Length: 227
Length: 227
Image 1 (tube, chains in turn orange, red):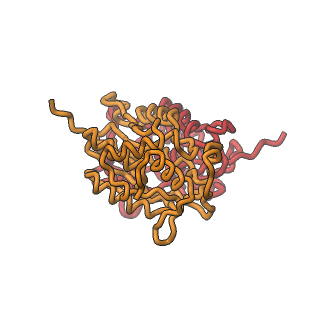
Image 2 (spheres, one colour):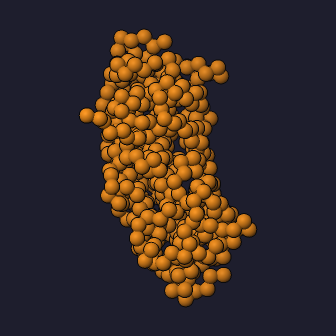
Image 3 (cartoon, helix red, strand yellow):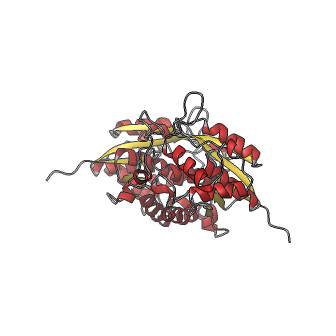
């Protein structure tokens, strides 16, 4: 039996999670349109990682959309605010950190929705994770469900009743260690990915921000080396 | 009794509807942050109108966010596709026209949500209209309701339960003639606004696209002259 070939838009930051998510979509047989954003983030080096990952995983196309999110400020990732370092798991478990970029996933998903509609695709992949995460509101299952419901009312497909938009979140309920294991199972070359919020001028990871700490914890718990 | 002064983000295209919506928000006592988009639209001249309207109505600030929506194509407003002319009311009432820009209002509202969050505002104004309109899915009440629900799960305020995001749509159930009358009541100088999808090189309205036809009909039915 031949599997139906379908297009999907995959959000790709270049980090461990989104790369694993893209690898997952590829294994599910989707033709993947990878979408990254140049939004004024201080860790712009992640876009090089995104390009490497998209090429390595055979994405059909990779677009880096430039969006002026830094015009609003309000986050340590886009404004002149220090990125917090060496936070404990307990600290990460309380409140929303200053690295939260207001409405970022809402905006990213909305661009994915636009591209999906142009491609006549009803499948969007996003590597959000609600377990080992930094406490961002737009990574929670209830947000994703509400987004999907809205998306089906926002678009041509929704009105014409042709298809239903589906927001795929294969990592949503995995721990970081489980994500690392899934990535290895999918043959992902982790060395292509980049997770740090606050790299130095040479593009080296700081090893101390939430993203670096969560990544290290994940590899340690999975018993896999992160080269 | 002194009214509480509150910030609001107001989407402003520079057309009749969004200008009336901004005038309404101002009369309601909001300090207004006007937000426009340079998204590769062929009728970029509307951004000049947006700047004039924002200034005339005393917006606290006006940002034109550059977003690469034209990277995806798929609409007569952003790609090399002819804008339909002289469509009848019956034709406008059937189906979604090629001037529909995929997920545009979803994207615009998402940027407004980001700015509102940075401003600690929970009020967003958008001049969508579900009566005399072009058949866009993202102008319908059910879309706005679903968006508002999603927005309250997407953001810091939603998680912390501080406030509820409100998407204000004062024009939603007005006819174009009623919008014109409201604009006049609010003292809006209509000559500052610009509605055409397909202006000529000198920035003059074509008089034949849906936006021009709906505007003319609105002024005629309101018995007001559009100078």
